[in-house]
Image 1 (cartoon, rainbow, N blue to C red):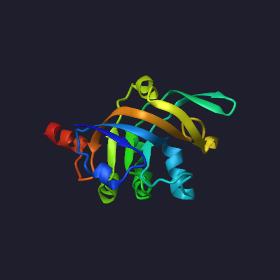
Image 2 (cartoon, rainbow, N blue to C red; image 1 turned 90 degrees about the vertical axis):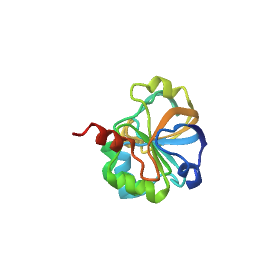
Image 3 (tube, rainbow, N blue to C red; image 1 turned 45 degrees about the vertical axis):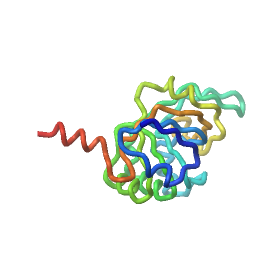
Length: 181
């Protein structure tokens, strides 16, 4: 099933999603990687995360004074955020986008909060950037361009695929069970 979502998201929006659904998002999303997740847990969020979408990505940015243009943005491996992701989800995040899935602690946080993990296709940074309408803001640029939190306005950002849902469904686990002897 193809689903279009608009941020900020409600639990009702994400609770209806199941593994295998294709999702497109419009509105505001935030990029965040390892250092940003660590800082959020240790120091607090620079933005309100209620109903938010976090994209595990390190974008390529073109800077022109105080104006930023996103050149490319693709997913990074999400397991690197396992130590922090559950706590960040508990702060209101409804969608996490990345690649490779996440651990049981994150799966429990998704279920507890009615949130989902969406997989973005690796190698599609040039495709995904076409959905970025503008860079709205940047937070924690002192962490460096890839690690900063980039606030993006997007339109029909995707395709993204539900691989961990709020009902405990986990496509990665299903595949592991099928290929394990």
